[in-house]
Length: 156
Image (cartoon, rainbow, N blue to C red; front, side, top):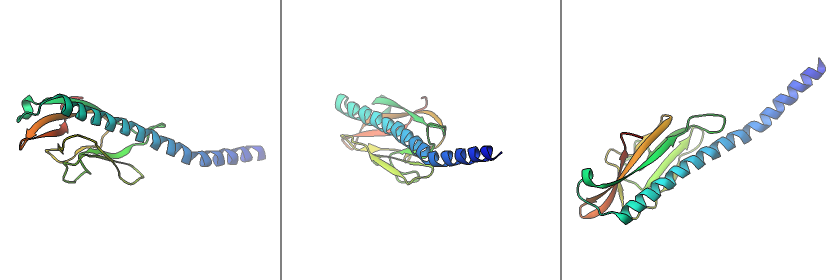
């Protein structure tokens, strides 16, 4: 009986000691996944701006679509509270930044290195639900200047 109690106490102590490391690993994996998405957004915008001409209408503009995977909570990944392209949720948008936060951490920001300004017509493009999404980046001429218009695509 005493052996059983000692084994249970040691098991609980081991689990308690390992839990912070597991949580840190989950957060690190989610950060890595989001950073990969930001890298793909940057590459798509840079290639679009460098290799296409800006035209006045979005319907005929050169477009790139970038897949965004919003992770669900699991043993290997932490669930973000939000992921937003163009600024923080509820903010004005039109910023060259991706903001995100994990459930238990402050907001993190990563500046997008685009050669031209961006515009998010409906405010920041915000994701809060698990799943795969698609973001479209269109090169449009606004006031005679090339601008990358970022919006949520219809299909992933």
